[in-house]
Length: 476
Image 1: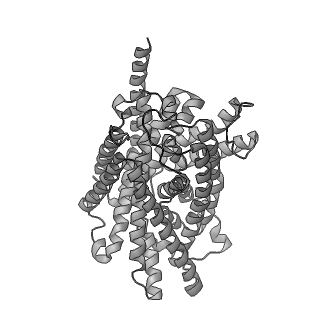
Image 2: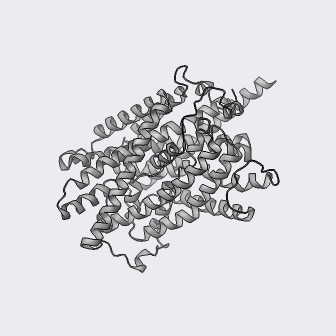
Image 3: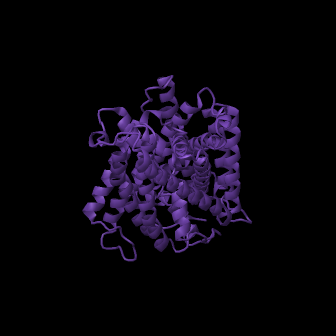
């Protein structure tokens, strides 16, 4: 089986996703409400940073995904796009780093979900927040339930993702309404003057927040990875992308503003910020369960997000396995469910090992930050390829664009968008390598983040060289 045959649906992948499945998939995958807490810790200037991230990164990425998903359709998405623009090795690096980044992303999202879930039970449950055993059991349970549903097929797995998207939407609505009500009844707990909205680019935390925002806006490229399982992808992907962009940007900007209205910046916790804020508002208006309800919705939304990423990213080692650069077993489909079950199982095992390693010798908070920074480096690197492939493939295909749904920008605008997004991502990757000021051991932090990322990339290149020799051997 080849990626070309896969694009036509020959290997047995089932086209079950429509426009609203993709919209809910994007919301479940991208709208991680934990980013609101991290951004709000910077203060009102984070609202300006969200707008800078929207213009400098999110819009260029959306334009690139719209065009590339039409120009190079099929299962594999960014792997196929990078391969078409830069050749086999760079396609492999893009696909490998994007997939392997989730070995860090999944544990960080799982730890957030474990922490937010404790807010449902109030102070009694919160006593377990620093308990590594609780965090490990919760995270492994969610990971393997989501992986199991992925093996049973998108017909079943998409319902967990859709429920997660609906829960995220509901939680975001609750946050926005509560924030607006708090502002009307009690005024803002944070000063929102023009001076406070201006970011201080003399501080490293400003650039770190910008890196976080770039990571939060990432995910539009995930849906097209499942191009072989989308009904009429050339029509459905553009529709879903446009709707998703509007909804996601509104949730992030308005949601951060609501947290700032509800709580002073200095009191916002990186994990518990959202239930904190809603509890504070609930106590003021006589609804003490407000925070617990929101915590439950955010926890469900996070589980849906994790399920979406587990399902989507497993398609990358599947496609690369078909191209024989990774072990051939990764390219197998389940005989009954038509899913890449081997890729899902291996992904689950590796994520479990990373989670266990991250929780050893570090506090829950520091493990969470380390995993976030590793995710930023590894998952943003492939987006550099996407944003350069966008103008490059447009230029190569000049005069040969029949049947291609081009993004609504000229060739010059195409280069401008691609290079702007490229610069934003490069900045985000660099700042992700800087240890936080409160790190107990900056050298160890740097070793884990940068050394861990370099090691994972090196392992991928060894797989590529071995696979390349195998490919050459079969063509002689």
